Image (tube, rainbow, N blue to C red; front, side, top):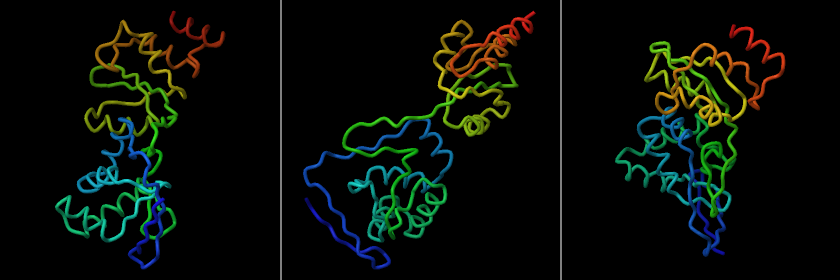
Length: 221
């Protein structure tokens, strides 16, 4: 065991105890979360995220953001010390960095990142969404932890995209298989009104009640 003592910017004593023989830490992030983070941040805040991911936190996942470390980040990024400070405050405001309650001590939000010595999988509560591109009439069947936010990110490229339905379970791959014959590319499909009506009637388990089946059949006629 190795004990490291140092002072925070406020003069508070901080003590870290680490195992000298522990395995190398890793950082893990899902691609959809990476997309979200890149949308939330810009310029030096984004660059700082990747620097923090390379840092090796203590056993509790704590990152020590004292002046010496901030100066190091400023040198690596080629910016001023105040720019690093502003970027840290930006990450705190957006809850990407979470304070541990001790001065200069933070951790990366576990909703986006995983730290550890063994690979772990964060359980994501994915929702399946159906979006319509009003420009060409194509439909997107995808999944996201936040479909409304996903809609906004897509609208930055395709302003005519609109979220029209959400199923509160991850059934994306099953819907992709169901409508494989109508796939255009990736997650985009050439669905007709009956297909859309069918998806809207589905429950999370991809099953219809007898009443729903009857409703679907009557509308189909």
